[in-house]
Image (tube, rainbow, N blue to C red):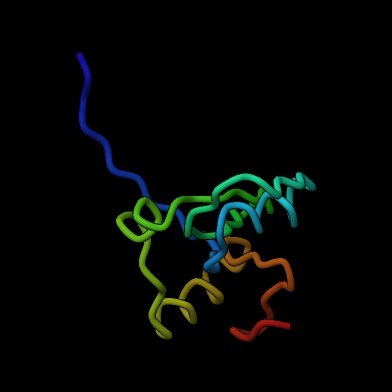
Amino acid sequence: MLKAYVGTKIIMGEPMDECTFLSKYKHQDLPNRETQPGYHVVYPDNYHSWSPKDVFENVYRELLRGETIFVLECAPEHLVTKKGVENGKEK
């Protein structure tokens, strides 16, 4: 029998259309492909993914300043960006 579950994770994200993501992170050149808006997503293990805009915005919200400070103090390994995060600021 299926049971209901809820999960949480902290990711880093930035708006990026699908074709830009595929070109920049998957090294695929798709000049004739129609693109769609979405987000480049980076998981704590530094895995890069792409999510359609509506899916991303229905699942994630931006961390508030106090939440970011809490995560940096308690679990800094959960904040990862392509540039890195140090003391609450991108480096």
